[in-house]
Length: 468
Ligand SMILES: [Zn+2]
Image 1 (spheres, rainbow, N blue to C red):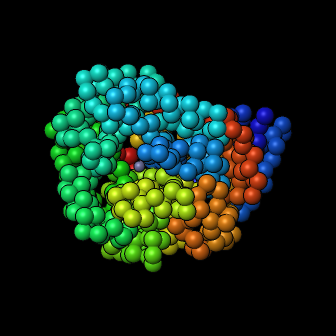
Image 2 (cartoon, rainbow, N blue to C red):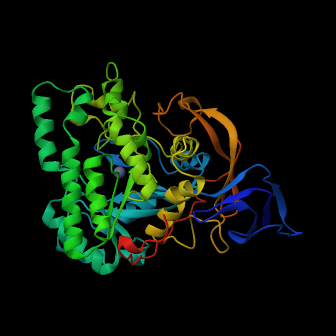
Image 3 (tube, rainbow, N blue to C red):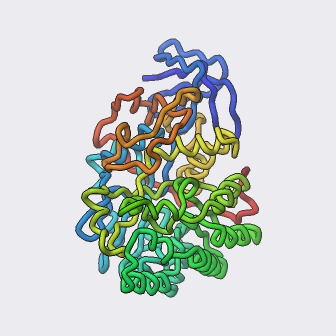
């Protein structure tokens, strides 16, 4: 079956122009002006923009946390993603204490397999590093995993120390695997949180006060130093502030193989949101925490100059009324994480493109093309080009909508962007040539999303990175 998307404006990271797109089965057969395909179903895209489906490289669906789990599973999370124009995501398979990496991967496959309706891959999060685990790292690429992650925060739970971080990063380098790191100084934060709780400082606002930006900056510098000593590639997840960004900038200026992302919510919210009346501020508890207004402009400018190369979400929703409330009397028990998988593209487009901060091509680059390249999906995802999967979103840039939990699809009872007006959103979304979203109708089926075997990427240093 073929589909001809006619009369739209195609947007890629490299160019934007009037062009037709021929979908041939699951992939894109041709892109060009005046395409003809008598057999094809013709879709009139006049006045619409034809973008590659978004790729969200940082999500946590159905993530167990103590006795609860993040509230979106691989069905509801995928439906939400699809309505937002995202057709691929990479989630984290978290190793439990004493567990093998491949066992963790199997667990996450079981969570996703029968529910998935968009395409997905897994990073492997190491939480308990030992010799057997180090030996396992080299086997991950055979299973389609080309990235590992470690956290320098959450002491006593999933944090790894410097020794383990260094050893695992070295093994990852040897296997061509990219190491992703959550950079915050977990030792110091642990002291600050315990002291805050002991003093009765348990309100959500203390979440930000106990995780100051200097501790993100310091840890970012430490992870970068290890990566430089090893000449290993490093991906810094969710950069939130100038302290961290300065380290990333300096490393990239030195030519180090350091890539960094921010998550979309860090462009919108501040520590003041945590101080919302009553316990309401807990809706904004995520780590690293929201910073100050001045950090927003620093992040926007980094998205322009490519110090930040990817915008993801760290989507990890917890239902306020039934889950977040567990931390009402103890700051340290508020589940960390915010929803955003559905909103990412629309709010970034509104503030980034409509706001005049960067153009549509850069928007596509940050949310689809560079994520594909960095994470081993280049040539397959993240671009409108012959041979790529036909993951396509038709955007109406004139239409307006007000974001609300009432019309959102995530299984969570609030939306951080409640009341925000956006102009421009995806009306039709295709996954591998099949129509997944048509207006407010969802046409996907559980189990139709596909696991992505990702390639190992031999990254060069940041001086050689293509384009902006
Ligand atoms: Zn995360």
